[in-house]
Structure formats: structure tokens, C-alpha cells
Image 1 (cartoon, rainbow, N blue to C red):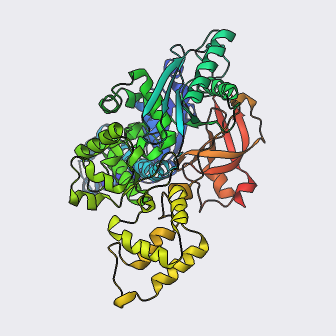
Image 2: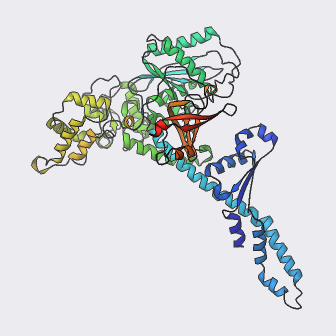
Length: 600
């Protein structure tokens, strides 16, 4: 009856989990140790707990049971299920007590054998569905800051895909078009077993050798030579397995370059999905002349140069943001990624010379065929020097040009001035004449406009004040509106820091570049302060923060509330100041707290 269903599904119900035995624990049950002997009311089970424990059940490492906390309520409901028989059997001379006993027994068996298991399954299904919905929303919330991370412009980048026995894979991409100019493999000595140099930073690595000076020196020489011969300005090191040893190697190579380090630095880049991408048909089409084993290094380098252009190629579940993405429906994740990319393209535009076909086809007015033709034209003929040169690309006719010109920006990779500086702005070519007239009336010369095109961020405060005053004044002849929506809108495209040029550099801090060798989790002590920690992922229960020790620390949601930061939760890519609370070397875990300096 309905009373029984209500009792089983009410917040007073309970959920209990237990490990599936010693054999299961030995084969991976350690990850679910927090859920051994777990028992709570349904209302107190969070969405991430449901997803974690559902995964444990799927892996046969946990057992799940759902039951009412008070079974006496079920007995009362069963008793109420047979009132006619009870009143009839209570009459003087009634001989139907046997009938009542049979009915009560049938009701009890119906509950224990049919209704209770069915309701338990329904409760689990609804709870898991709600948890998945929250996880999808969490994934979507993390996508925007990931895609809008600022690019590293104007320099060639060396990508390093860390490895073990097969060595570290290297690839250099050019400053403008992100074309592959060189690739190589270095095989430094494997780190000693138990040295803590794996990607996780806590457990021992798979290497078993000792450091061989000759092999190490040769690897340093190769990396330094690549940096010197190709004008590399930054190195992107993947954060996967053996990343710590790769970082130490790169730090040594930076010191060995002809510049003696100079301004050359490296950054640790998330490599989620790089291996999957390298073996995909998309990578084969884009990087057909690059060996498969080096394609992941190309992707890592391009992620530092332009995150938006590269992350659109990765499967949603492999992006490494949100929670339990691989347990979520791929179709829904893909739809959220498509929507986030469309919003990002509309918000920041696309730098056409360095954009991938996967990003170009997301521009309104372009499809996959035209995007591929545009990329092929740039690869063969060189960088586009102006928006007008878009007309030379096969498939871009007059109508297509009008539709796409406002979304595509032109910048010079070598910093040289553009023939038309407005090509680096969001001003549509149809409004160039009016824009030049406004700039001339405000006394802004071509030099200031060229500088604006190179750095973005809007004009100086005084120039913007004059432009806005001109926009507010009546236009000659009664006021003619520009195709961009009026003179005021045109002025904002030139003055607003988030509209002029690429706003990603205004919305987030630049990529964190360092030159020193990395620390490990074993070096961390409670109370250590990390001033430039970077948020890697955000979940309802807290933030995962990269503090540069190989293991992301957890900044629990309670710490954010304690410091009064609940209303302003840092997003993916944000730079924050944190303090180490506790270190668990065996489990590779680091607990963090917000430093008071960040909260000021």
C-alpha cells in the first residue's frame, strides 16, 4: 500500500554500504575505504557520495542496501492493509481468524519479497538520477573557465608528454599557426623505485633504475637544443605519470640553454584526454605527418598556446573537470560542451591564424568543410595578414565573409604592425569607415590603434572618455547608425576591456610559468603556504587545487564557508593563496585551507 511506499522512501529511510570482502579491497577497494560501514539517512547522502558508491557497486567492491530505519512502521502498515477482515473476524461467533492470518501473512510476504526490493531499487534510481543531474551541472559550470583560460601568445611552445620506459615525447609548435616544427624523444634514466616521481607525487614510480649521468645529460642537451634552435619561449609539461621527473629534466634544460634560463619558463598543463586524442581519426587528419607517439605532446603544447582551440577536440568525459564524468551520459556531456564552446566563441572570438579546424567550425557561418579549407590555406600559404584575405579561401563567398568577419580576428605572431589594426578588434569591416572617423575625431592616431591591436584591453582612459563623448553627441546629418548597432556600441567595441581584443587575458591570470625544479608531496608540512596555487577542478564538496607538488590538494567547501568565501567561490584556473592543513603521504592526499591573505 501507499503507506509502505512512503515509509521506505521518506527521509527517515537509511542507506548502508559495506565493502565486498578482502579480495575486493585488495584489488582497488582502498579507494572506497571512506564508504565502508557507511550508513546515513537518505536526506544526508550527497550527490557525489551516491556517484562514488554506485561506482563501487558496479566494480563489485561495495554492497548497497536501502531500508526503512524503523521496520515497525511497516508492520503497522500491513495491519492497516486488512481492516475489513479484522473487523469481520472480531464479531461474536466469527470463524475467519484463519483468513485474517493468511491475509496478514500474504501482506508481510508481499512487503519483504516484492515491495521492499522494488522500492529500494526505485529509491536508488531516483537518487542516482538526481546525482547525475547535479554532476552534469557541475561539469557545465567548470567548462566555461576551462575554455576561457588565457592563451600564451607570441612565442613558440615546446610540449613534453612524460613517459617511463619509452621516454618523454617532445614537440615544438610555432608561435602563429601552432604548426609542428619539430618533434623528438628523450630517454632519461628511470627514477629510482619509490622516489615519488610519478604523476600522483606520493606513490613510488614504476622505474627501477638509478640515475645515469650520461643519459641524463643527453636528454638535457636535446631539450636545450630544441629550445635554442626553434626560439621556444615556454615549455608545457603534461601533468600525467612521471611528470615530476619530466619537470626536473626541463628545469635542468632551461638552465643549460644559451640564454642560461633567461626568460624561458615552463608550465604544468593538464593532459587529460591527450592520449585518447592522439589515437583518434581527428588527430590523424590534423597531424598525419607527425608520428602517433608524438601527437599527445603536440596537444599539450597547444593547450598552453590556446586552450580554447585545443580543448574542443577532447571527448567531454576526458576533460577532467566536474565529477565522475565517465559515469555520466556521453550525449548530455557533449551537448553541454557544444553549448559552452558556442558561448566562448561568441564571447572571445577566434584568432584565425592559430585556430584549429575543430574550433573554426564552431564559428557562426562556417561548417566543417570550409573550416578545413581555411586551415589548409593557412598551412600552405602562411598566416593571413588581413580579414580581407579571407575572401581568397575556397568556399568563403561574399555572404559567408559578412557572417564570419566579425568573429575572426587577425594578429601578427611576430608582433609586427597590421596593415589594418581594426582586424584585431571585434569591429566588423562594414563599420571600419565610421570607426576611423570616430578615432580621427578623438585625436587617436594609428600608433595607438596598432598598440591596441597587439595588446588588447581597450584604449587609455582619456581616449575612451573622448570617444564616448563623441558617441553621445548627435551625429552629423541627424545621426546615422552603424551596422554594429550605433556609434555607442561601436565605441564600446574599442574601449571596453572585455570587448576589445581577446578578453581571456582580462578575465583570468596568465599561465603560471616557473623555472625551478618541482617539489614533491613528501616536502610539504602542515602550515606551509602556497601563494600561487591554481584551481584545477570544482565540485560541490570543494575545490581541487594544484600547489605544485604533483598531488592536487582538496580545499573543502567548509573551509570556503569558514573564511566567508561561500558567495565567491574561485573557479577553474583561478590563482589563490592556500595553507596546508594535513598531509597523508600513504594515500597521496593533501588537505588545504584558504590563507587569510586571499580572503582580504
